[in-house]
Image (cartoon, rainbow, N blue to C red; front, side):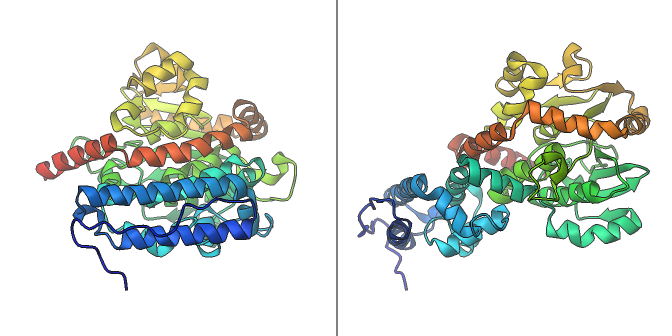
Amino acid sequence: MTTVAPTGALPARSAPVPHFGGVLATDAAALTAYAADGEAVLAALPPRPARDEAQQARAESVLTAGRDARRAFLALHAEAVYDELTAARGRHLRLAELLRAAADRFPGLVPTPAQMAAEDAFVQADKDGREIDQAIFCAAVLRSPSAGAHLVDAMLLPTARALDLLAAFRDAGRVELDSVLVERVGEAGHITFRNAHCLNAEDNRLIRDLETAVDLVLLDDRIRVGVLRGGEVDHPRYRGRRVFSAGINLKDLRNGDISFTEFLLGRELGYINKMYRGLLTAAQNPVWAERTVQKPWIGAVDAFAIGGGMQLLLVLDHVVAEEGAYFSLPAAEEGIVPGLGNLRLGRLTGAREARRVILGGRRITTADPDAHLVCDEVVPAGQLTEAVEAAVRHLSAPAVAANRRMLALTEEPLELFRSYLAEFAVVQVARSYSEDVLAKVERRWQRSQARN
């Protein structure tokens, strides 16, 4: 049983910093011993909210040293570790599965499920940031051309949940999930966001449901085109109106309920990449066109597409917006990285305009002369459904899927996507624990509480 040090007491480390020699088994044992020593120090300290300044400094030094050791270990062994976890890439593990396997096979390399569960009991500002250790591991895997490509493939496979629901969806043409409705209407698969309580903002639940819905649309042979649209919301200002998306749920971020594996990295490798690159159905086939199922996608924007909502539009093939709608990536205001917006927006708008939107917070409205750079059609609110139906008819042509596949290969090669995500994983999780972001989400939360 670990004894918690009294206030002011600083438990000492006993293990020296490991020096890795390049032999996996030996280096893994050294990392395990060093990580266990660090965990003993952390366990002897109070939880973060109860630490004094000196205790917090000690905790941060232990956490930093552990992360430095993990980076050094992975610089030598990332591919070997990944191969061992995946039986020499003979099996595909999704992010959460991969992290659980790594925690079990290489103790100290990533947090255990129990450590993550304990961390999840705290709001974001009171956590020790164990997701940073998950990001270090995922980034090392993604930096490897071979291991990274294999992980991308793993995240493009249909989810078990979608496969369980597929027969029912094919029969009924409709599945209601907790925060998403997916329906087959003619040759279109309509996905409606129904996170009504938060302006269809993205949270862990919505990301999970969206991936299931995207899988179902791509797996149903009777569907030729996918459609994304926001449902009606509860917000007093927009009650009874449809809203596309308010982006990341900042209240959940403040409360520590935005997951690195399911949200920050998982959404980019999961449902968004499936819409862009297709669903992987024949992993062993070397011909990309024959190993994936791809379909064109339409976005119908009511009111606004903010943050993650606008990011979605960047992978769609046709965007229809109602008059008066607007688009924004408020990264400068929120303090986090707008997903793959930094990679993709400039292709549509040019580099200078992308900087104005991402760095300067510029909002693009449907009345702006350059609205056509992010939106194909602007129609009166009452005509949005009709415009979507016309777009479905147009994009149902047999050659559309093949040509969009070739466009994606040209616009964003897999290697570019993989290398971007390797850096994004580390940068995004660090931003989610940065003082300025924590202060901003706390202020927003305090204002919302005062209104209630």
